Image 1 (tube, rainbow, N blue to C red):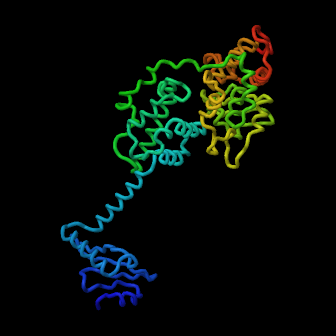
Image 2: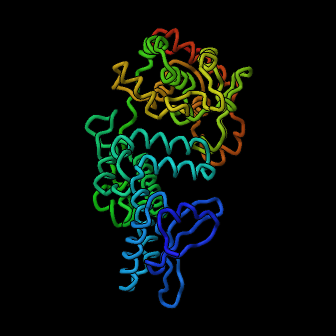
Image 3: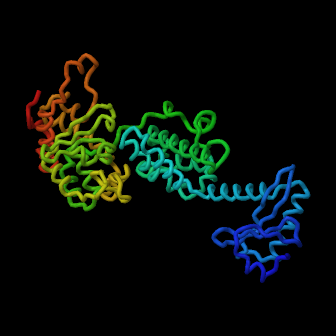
Amino acid sequence: MALNTKRIAKLNAPGRYRDPETRGLYLQVGRTGTKSWLLRYELNGRERFHGLGSLDDFSLKEARERARAARQKIADGIDPIDVKRAERAARAVEAAKAVTFEEAARQYFDQNEPRWRNRKAAAQFLSTMEDYVFPVFGKVSIAQVDTGLVLKALEREHPNRPGKSVWMAIPETANRIRGRIENVLDWATTRGYRDGENPARWRGHLQNVLPARGKIQRVEHHPAMPYSKLPTFMAQLAKREGVAAKALEFTILTAARTGEVIGATWDEIDLDGKVWTVPAGRMKASKEHRVPLSDRAALILNSLPREKDNPFVFIGARSSGLSNMAMAAVLKRLDRNDVTVHGFRSTFRDWAAELTSYANHIVEQALAHTIGNAVERAYRRGDLFEKRVRLMTDWSRFCANPAPVGKVVPMRTAE
């Protein structure tokens, strides 16, 4: 019996109903009452059924037209099922290639988070991307990232080093950034988001246009503030609102490195004992470091906001840790482009050498520097913590109340 609109409306029993007027065309009624069109055909000795769409989308007349068009392809040796699959795959590839570099980088980060060596490495991955890469090509399709964009990120002027590119101003960090871009692009290629050579590859590629780290003239010492000017600066800093300003003050009071502070988590802090224990995995020397907390440093910690399920002590704008540029931005807002965050460690070192009688190895221990040779380190197993408690207390007092400049004041004798 021929298919027509009235008969089709009455067909409710599950099964396949042939259309006598169109070779191989069937109306398929599913168990739930859904109705769709199928084309039965043979190609290379194989019976196949090609879906032509739902009855809701295509009428009997339209289904017959689609069936004839499919049979024309079959007559030319083209399998319509294979064509449909190829078109679907092509659409999926195009959709995947619409993923931006920032989206890909965050997916890469999330999928590789369990493999990070430590929280510091994880935090630095995102912070360096946010500071140096996303502003340049974060919104560009991952498939469109090329050598020119990679070089634009690495060669643009460093925000805190006028006249110097990122690659020349911070060669160690810049090379890590290049490596992180390369890893994200490799991941995207494997995922099918892009194809071709990796434009962030060093060997045989970027090495042809960028000077190797070892050949870059050693960056000048981090500009440091004279210790005589520090108390006035600290008074100004204490008046600043915001987590970044508090982080900078805390960094100065503890003589810590930027990465150690922005990666600090509450489980490292003992407020009752006034000690901050930085695990070995987050230290440059890969050795656990205990930091005495002065009264002012502890007060800063007590004043900080906390977020549920956020372990970071200093919370950034994205409800994670601070960006590694956040404290530098505070200096910029205070019109102190003549100094760097890291330079305050030199300020501390100069103060200790010129205004106190603390032994050099105590000061070096406070800075978490490796002391002496292997033999000396073997004999000096302790971390001189109690002596460093007095040192950091004196440092905090100086930051708030300067001693007269021009003569050595033996604030404490500690050998």
